[in-house]
Length: 356
Image 1: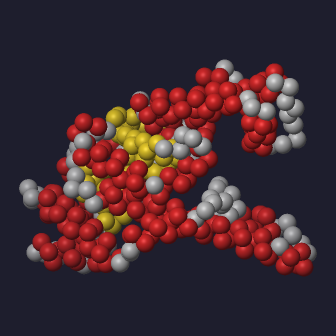
Image 2: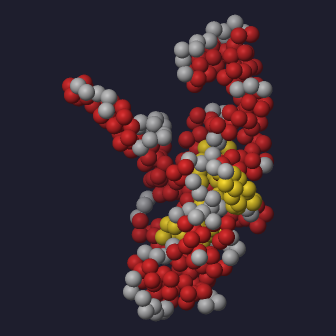
Image 3: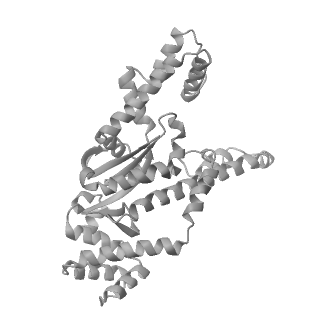
């Protein structure tokens, strides 16, 4: 029953259900080493030899035991702390090393894996081997940028997630269950660290400006006698217009636009339900999920293109996370109803905004 619900994204059914939560937590220790350690620590004996059968048998045993949930919670917390020690990661040095990343240029593009990008850009396009050799430095640079940015994302995500998993209110899912990073009370939760979405910002700016941002900028540019070029991409046009406005002292127009952007962020910060619904409804198909989520939304309100730097701003992130968890009874989770590909889903979520 629970396996079917988990596989079909019916994670709403697990919320507040003791047996459902118990099933998820048993699943989180379904690794041979973890299972053996749990059985040894608790003195539970199983007759099954295969891991999949042990999991079902253990679930049945803990389901009948009134202390079964507490046994799992104690084990998961202890194993999580053991993992941090065993990993031997020097977190202080890691936090400093993150500042050695000076730019955030992806190798290839954000939508494709590096190998697909290299195949589409070089392997299937360049037929002359000598030309391919001549572009070796470009290929190496793309590969390095991909590795560097992936490294940055991996370790900033690890450090942010550890802030949650080490808090006494949280029960970690140490075995890494898909769609579940940890539990708070009777809710399984997936952590999503994200930047304020550009598409959502564009949608809200259009409402405030009465037209798309670029169209509004062109209107202001025309009134000021600034020439615009249609041969550029939209981002290049936006940049060129704003630079020309800055050069001739039209700071008021740029300040007005910046003010509208900040309004959008503040409105979402004060009432994040619409933003959360948008984030669920606009997921990529390959990563779709209807699980409960905690969104950590990172925003550099002075220049949103620099928001990537916020992932290492632990002096800002840690107090926000700690405050949220310390006061969780006041914040809790909000029920979200969203549509995805003509299907409707229910889930629970909340946001933690970290704004510079």
